[in-house]
Image (cartoon, rainbow, N blue to C red; front, side, top):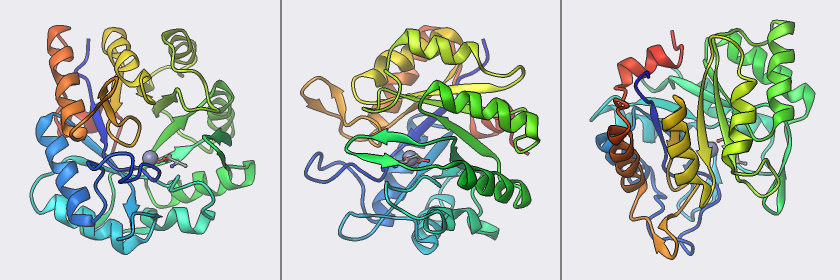
Length: 274
Ligand code: KMH
Ligand code: ZN
């Protein structure tokens, strides 16, 4: 099997300090969390921004600050969220996709449809999807396709046919979100069966599904995303001390399963960047 690309989702938009004291908030804290996750084995970090009061922001300056702090010390692949938080406008969400030069991201996320998201709705109507796809192509940004249910995978196939997405692509199955597809191995297998030829995939299990789905993906030859954005617990009733702790566990399991851990350079190849 190919080496596994581990992505660390270190902050997200939703987790609060009330839920866990370990969620990073300031650019310095987010960059530190990313660097620690990278040191633990994550080839890529998935970033969101926060304001000092902890609310989510897609402000390009906040992302630039985080990215600069990371790249001053190490070079994990940097993936910025264009999902942002529920309720944000498309313009707000896209700000990090316009960063250039030393803070240009290596990858952007691209959610291929709307989904109930906890108590809210993560809205991605058809027109927005076309605008995002065209913009990413024009700007030479590689999207990671965030798939919350099988309808979104069907949309990916449609967009490929229409020429709006160009394989080889990388898919990330986000499973176990209340409102999206359940976080079971059966659901994961169903999605993996629909991945277009030559494309790669990873899984991001939400909550308790994180460990089981990550372990399944390691056995199935897929890639893995873990981190406090998706799951704040190390085990039932015990908070994870940071995303690096969750990454380190995946590294140990991967080694037991004879999966090597991809470096950022190898991840670049495996995720079809450049
Ligand atoms: N926070 C969610 C509404 C992404 O990063 O692209 C969207 C999200 C997906 O987290
Ligand atoms: Zn995210």
